[in-house]
Length: 266
Image 1 (cartoon, rainbow, N blue to C red):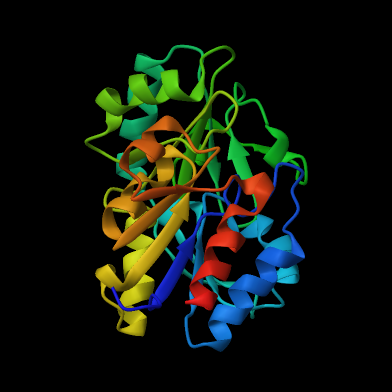
Image 2: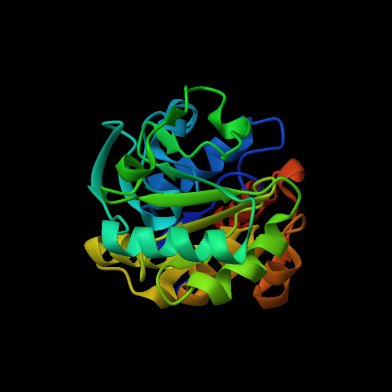
């Protein structure tokens, strides 16, 4: 890799966004300073587009984001979805049946760009507090392409849910978790953070070896495997720390900003 990367890819929550939901001015300044030196950045997140307003505000409309773990390409300047990649209805119905058989008691919902449709058993989480969850009839829930399918269980942890969901439906969709409370997630086969990052890098003519990535949760593993260099924040899930090229400061310590500042000094 050259002295400076050609592209910076960064997860948001737990990596860049602090536990209280804020982004520090120091972090914004570091990203913008590198952009001024000709190094673009892309946020690669599990968040749906409807939750990107705060990020667009913080960064002044800079950059593009890959949302919902690769299911959307989102323009932060225009605040608009520019591409969507969904699970087709036939596959979606098979996945729903497989998850319900493998994980009794799971509630399921489809997360669209700006709304959420759910079955009667789905328990809304903190991320859902800004909207009314639409409880659709079973026949209507699965009839259109689903950017992201989410499932919440009354008692099982995210790690436990992933361990059950992967063998049940992992040949039909990309299954992962981003540390949501008792939550497992799925997107279309072939779609992932790595896929979304690769799409963006290709548009810029940037090779994988010239990309650095930052993350904290298992849904960042594909991105870590694709990028030339990958850095886990100190608060990351053990699976990320195990494969990272290095571990940097925690999100609460502005670890990403500190690392980027070190690049600016080289």
